[in-house]
Image (cartoon, rainbow, N blue to C red; front, side):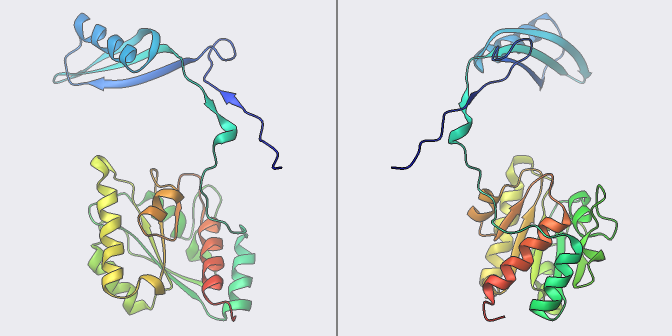
Length: 251
């Protein structure tokens, strides 16, 4: 009989453990006055917070106002019941990645990256691909066995696919930071549809990263892996090498 994992119920706390105290901030599309403050309090109440209190309110101009509300959350979750989907691979450091590519693949891996469609924010793709990297973690351009091609921002999916064909890319790495109205979902789906139409999807390792990207979402959208905040170049490089070797088991 399989042993049951002990339940681990958790909830927020502020003053004392399990008191449920939380802080909530939001903007309302109305000018600041006593009625808008009461509206903010009632909204927090409708969200399920008990004893809500507006602790801070500010006029943002042109008919908008900002609020910070404190309240008491009544809910809790069982941490033991949660299992977040993650790609399964061994994280190697930069030197180990280079060594494995040299020993097992015997040529440089070609990784082409871009922020696609309307997304003009390159902070994510630059952190992974540029030489200097981020937070002390060197980017893919510094890897001797990876040819990293960063196309930058607002790259049309058509142009990205064409460049991937020209460069004989092993990997396409996409960053999506702009997510208003879930536009990132349309952009990412558009790219997978184009790769399918070109008959390239199974030939290219497809990876996406961004602040609202999870591995589970990436798989749902037809990608091989998704990386969220806190990921570095060695995470992406290690996954790519592991995935490439899985697809070429004879090597």
